Image (cartoon, rainbow, N blue to C red; front, top):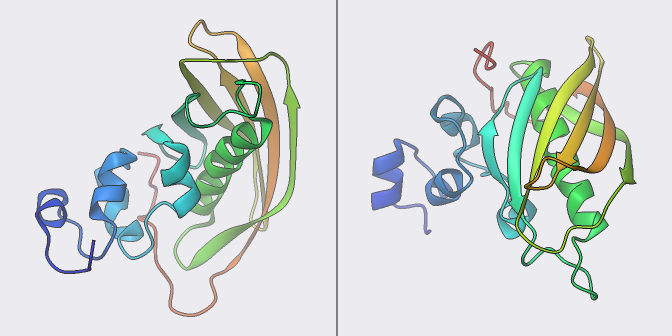
Length: 173
């Protein structure tokens, strides 16, 4: 999109260049204005991540296995890690509040079983939400509800450099 008032932008009520990306990722309407100038990130769009829920204490998203596999046709561990980091970082940023961001300090990922098709679903749950650090656990499951991967992310919460892109207050509600 070229930044002009496009049909997708008018339909979504979102100014900026990323209206269609936000719609494709199913970003909740209350967060679209906050992300209108940045989108969800090129990797999120490339991986096909679709959000079901976004909040500081709990976030949920899905990702297709197709297009995110390694050479032998199994879900790539890096794709699982990217899904986990996406949810944990969005949740931590929403917790951080207006004018603040989350910066990843640690991500660890344990792979439990292989997946070769379908969609995986990730549920991110807050472990600790502090003033300067937030930690989340992310459980990724296959279509049958079997655990595929467990991840933990710790984010440093700090003031956003430059002009702030303020997330809505209390975005979990």
